[in-house]
Structures are given as C-alpha cells and as structure tokens.
Length: 219
Image (tube, rainbow, N blue to C red; front, side):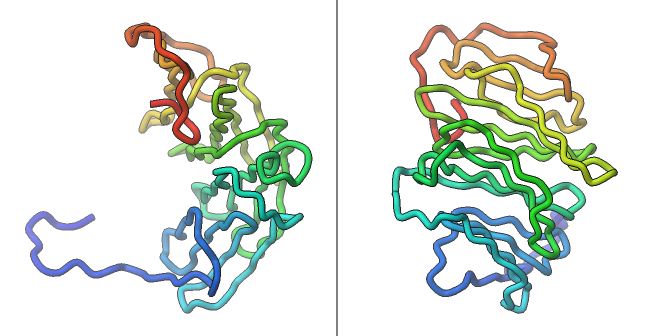
C-alpha cells in the first residue's frame, strides 16, 4: 500500500524476465516477490527473482494449433500450490481439458482433474479465507462451466463440478461467504452460498439478450 502523503517516482518492486523465446500468456508472483510462475501455450515455468530456472513442466504433447485458446494459472492462498488450466481440447491434444495442481516449490504434480470441457479459456478465483480455488471455463457459445478445487490437510485433492452449464462466475465476496454468477445470456444475476452453490437470491433485471462470451465469462 502506498502512503497517500508520499511523493516521488514509482519504482518496480520486482522485475522478472521470461526465458528466451517464451511468450507469456499469464503469470503469478509469490507474495514475497522471490519467484514468478508463468504459462505459455505449451507449458508452465517457475523462475527465481535472479532469473534462474526453478522448474518447468511442458504440456504434452506440444501443440502448434492456434484457435485463440489460452491456458490460465493461479497461486493458492498459502502460496504452496499453483493451479493451471489447460485448454487441451482446443489445442488438439486429445480428450477434454485439464486442471493441474503443481507443488509451487518443486513443480511436482499434486493433483490432476480431467474436466470434460472444450474451453477457449478460464478464470481462476481464489477464496480469500479458506483456500478453495474456483475455475470458470468458458466454452464460447456452448456456455460456461464452474468448478471448485482444494487440497485437504491430508494432501488429498477435492474437486466439485457445479450443476450449471450456462452461468459465468464473476467474483467472490470479500468475506468469502458467497459468490456471484451471471447467466450466460446475461438475463439475470445470482448470489450463491459458498461452498454449496445454493442460490441465496436472483435478480432478473437485464432483459433478454443473446449469448455472449469474452474468453471465460459474460459481462
């Protein structure tokens, strides 16, 4: 946080340079600013602040298919795991998309979930208190699918698929007790209880519109 009474030139707190030839799609920085994790269309890379490679993991098989698909990533609340969405179906890797959880220190795969989606992209939402990770996968005109994942105290992964194919997740409440979704056709907005997804109330105030998609969520 910057003191409102402070004056002067802003300086970057940390600068990370990707490896030569890498085109970064998205990145997340550890809170202590000592490491960055970024994704390309074909892999995930972790670098130290010094620029040294900590670990890397390729998305097999390598794909040269360009359909506008974009993988996504998020760092868990405790900084121990990295969650990566892989749009494997659009990339032509066979099967559906994947949600892969990596150990942030070693790059070892902690968990892997086959999503059975054909997504163009996805948005992660990190729960502000309890460590759950929400994932909203946008499938273009076919709608949007919302998942929730967590790694339990015993290290075992837990994954939930919510029973909607036409709702886009917008965000979590600051206190984490509820989350907001919008109908894929932008007909209504709903507020859901975390983590059950039970609808608390719905507002139908937008009027009927055709489906729209901006990469992962309607706005």
